[in-house]
Length: 114
Length: 111
Image (cartoon, rainbow over all chains, first blue to last red):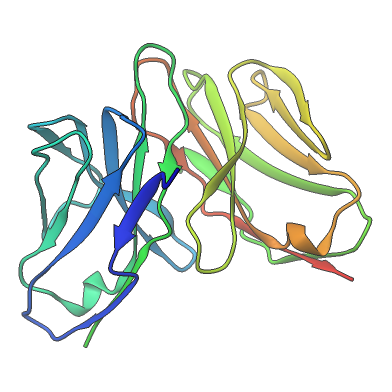
């Protein structure tokens, strides 16, 4: 049972480059989330999705885009990489069908913008 | 005022000690309380989940919620070096699919 899988695990980008962080889950969860984690700052929500075709902004969406064409996949796109986007990015998923359910996380993508 | 406050530590205790980790929150509408454990270079993993006041026990771990004081705690008994990690509290309210996380407390258990 893979759970939430993120690729790549590490990446170095130059300022202005673009890239897509991949996330896939095999738990048939309807909700998926993207967070960034900076030292001492906790987890900040970037975007989330309540189901295929539906996405919404979180706390820190600027500079990012998302799409959700299938239940399983929720890629995060950085269009013009900036040094402020150096962070660890986590994807998570959960099943929401009444009572709030815990989120399950991937192991993250460590991104450096130089 | 932040919605969730958590002492970032770091906290170092000897092996076998009882560890107490705490969070306070400001919104009385919060009803769901979780503790996540995060090892270095790994994603957070769910440790405890409760939606009521009182205590919930799972092995060496006890989660305690005091809604009247807006205070949640995680106790670790007979702490082991393998418990060394960052512990994050997370809370939510009914109908809200988003979690609010504390900043995390870094814990080291010294053999």
